[in-house]
Amino acid sequence: MKNKIINRRNFIKGGLGGAVVASQLKGKESQAAGAFDHYPDSMGVLVDVTRCVGCRSCEAACNQEQGLPEPEKPFNDYSVFDEVHPHGGHGREERRTTEYNYTIVNKYNVPGVDHPLFRKIQCNHCLEPACLTSCFVNAYSKTPEGAVVYDPTVCVGCRTCMIACPFYVPTFKYGSAFKPRIMKCVFCHETRLKEGRPPACVEICPQEALTFGKRTDLLEMAKSRIRSNPDKYVDHIYGEKEAGGTAWLYLSPVEFDKVGFDVHVPHEPVINFVRDFLSIVPMVLLIWPALFTGFHLLSNRKDAKSQHDEDNQEV
Amino acid sequence: MSQGKNVQRTLCIIAVGSALFWSGLGYAMDASDAPEVITMDSLENHYDPVEFNHLEHTEMAACTDCHHHTLGIPPTNESCVKCHENSPEADVLSCGDCHLTDRFGIEALATLDDPQLYHRGTPGLKGAYHLNCVGCHQEVGGPIGCEDCHTMKDAGKKMFKAGKYAPVSKGEKGGH
Figure 1 (tube, rainbow over the protein chains, first blue to last red):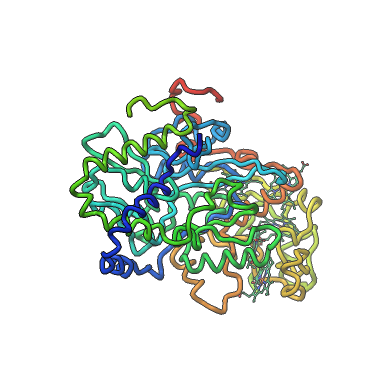
Figure 2 (tube, helix red, strand yellow):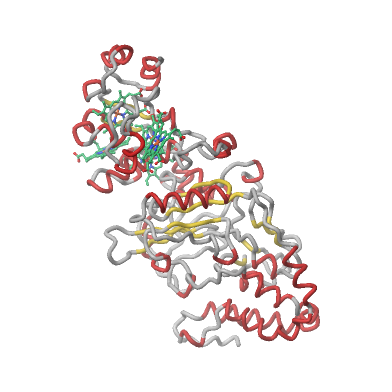
């Protein structure tokens, strides 16, 4: 069953193949790369999985800060960790971010570890965001502070960003066909980050499992934690290189795939795939409707993948 | 210096004897110098204050498990010994004198611009308390539930959508 599934990244790689034709557009390519200088002082968050106790305070604080809809259960109801979500991320049946939750904490029972581990998910705020580069109407921007933010007024609801994101983060707000809206963590940019304050989740975390700071300082801090506790951490900072580098970084006591991370995310910025893909944009304008339908079908197939061979009749 | 003042300022309940002791003598402290019960309320916001039985804890743990080397006792943590074995008693003892409440504020983050600073990941006060208290409790079987040490106040319930702010059931899976 799994083989039949076209995952989003493979799809983009597939698009790449088709776009090799367009490789004569070299000029455009290098321009795109140059246009993407990193902001050296941009902020980030270091998530230390060894410290998280799964209290869901971050989920609660996020909901309050962002004025998100009422949850199904109170945030201190820990039965959510045992829920099975057929549409979960990464082909697992786990909770994922939705238009109601910009952040989610999931629980992992890892063999050989005598207590459960918890891992927080939210937008990783890539240094070279695939959502941004894949967006035909420039609805996304990366702020100098480090946030990847989104402008709903220009969004046409094509959902390419959802397919481009290597972390399955942006979600689409349904029931608003005429007013499309992508929902995802915005690093509390408008309410906090802009003024140099940490996002709400970081501020509430009792265990300081979330550390806010300059990304460069955080990397140094992460390395020092690994160096002084080599038995406590695996020697890897997830997000230092993944997807070309992300503002949110992670430390873990076990191999990252055991706590829900996709360890196959390429280290090259996803932008490099997308960039080739983008060179077919002029073509896209011609075949937009067909392409659009394609995206739609693909994302439906993705949704349907764990729906146990239930055929997608709408095809 | 001003240790006496510190003690008075920080603690709700404290042995008066300790303050006297403080001002003069130069040797390391023991349990008799410590307060019995401390009401911890400097961060009070989502939760009620914590009644911390200091005396009871001094019977279960070494002073250095919580106070580092700051009492003038060499640290037990082996990753600290190599530099702090001979460190003197610190000028300040209260956790909040070194662990900042506004840990991620602009000024706090700016301290990292000093390349001479050795400790660059010192947790904030909330983090220091929980890493210390919950960390040990996890290992030895003390209370770890969020409401074991402090009950939730109205502000907390509002944030967690708990108690009277609980969502009206949407008829989904039970579990309340």
